[in-house]
Image (tube, rainbow, N blue to C red; front, side):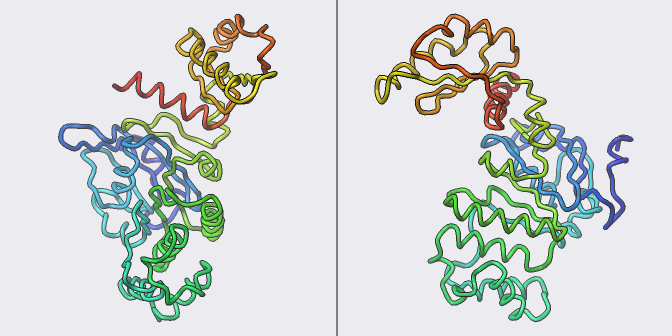
Length: 329
């Protein structure tokens, strides 16, 4: 372990660092899924994990909680060595997978009582009842889990994860396919748990969810490309961004103008990203002067209205996706 990694390593069961790993690498069938990943998550932090499908997020999460052994690399999770103390880690981690994994033919209460007994929680009936109240499921205790909507299944899965009082909660795209209201309620619960000292590592594709995290990391093709607070990640991308809107035209006519401009700008030197938003385009580049030069021929068009904007996290996400394809394929 390097001196840097040693400095990040917390004492067993204590310290301010929940996760500290260096050089994590994992391959399947000769394909490197995670490539020398180094990261640190502080206790009580909500840490967002972003990246395209197949980027290695799920594999990383499974290595952190001891379900998969890395091919190389070192680190600790909750003060325990991820290579030699995986069982101790699993005993203190709640892991919510992408797919609902509880029993569809048991009631909500029966599922929670089963989980409580499985983990040896004292007074399982009482613990299940408390979880029902906390998560707003009290009126659905007798309902079969399989008949719940996506949002209510999500609450039930979260309740099962926190019943054993874990120190770390790993959430793998927990709100995929859930409506915005249910997602907002879910995140309110996550912030309540973090305020009580629970550390949360969550993978997501939703930019509004990433912005709710204390820190985020972006991983693509197994490599960590950016990490820090949302403000730090946006600033680190060094993107210059313009928004152009169509004026004097609506509907199909406006769409044609936007489409034509997008085609004219795409792959133009200095333009690194062009994204349509209705009758507007978001245009970004890493070289502000080159971007200005690329846009200059279009700036005097009376049908277009231009304004310089601050780059968004979505702009950075798209830019990183484009760069990772170019650099890692």
